[in-house]
Length: 161
Image (cartoon, rainbow, N blue to C red; front, side):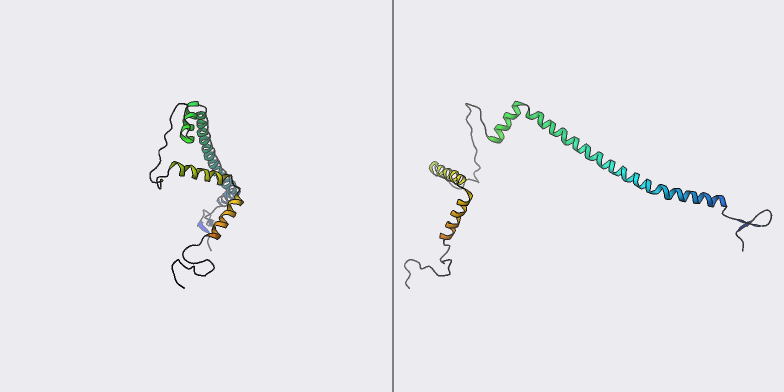
């Protein structure tokens, strides 16, 4: 049985020297020691990139909010927002409200509109439990169609029994 090429003295020489085997073992141990450390370093680099991107997004949001705050410090901007959002007008100006024709169901008179507004104000001032009780009473009094909720038929006018 021969382990390698014959040497000068005729004996078989191993193809893998002891030095190469020792170097391989040292490299294997070094890899086993350094691999978890390298994996941890790569994981930390990913976390660092993620945190840096989140910080840059937060800085962008912060800059945007600071710009909005600076706009709200301007009295003209505040006045424009009050006009647009709240419908405020300056003294002496005449406000005009454009009503969308699709939302207007019918031409209500001023008295009907005023009555509807009073009813809405009364409903807003009424406690919720009173509104619930009123709706229960209205639901109990209403009858839909020609049948009574009890299952009995309601006679119509002019019908003979």
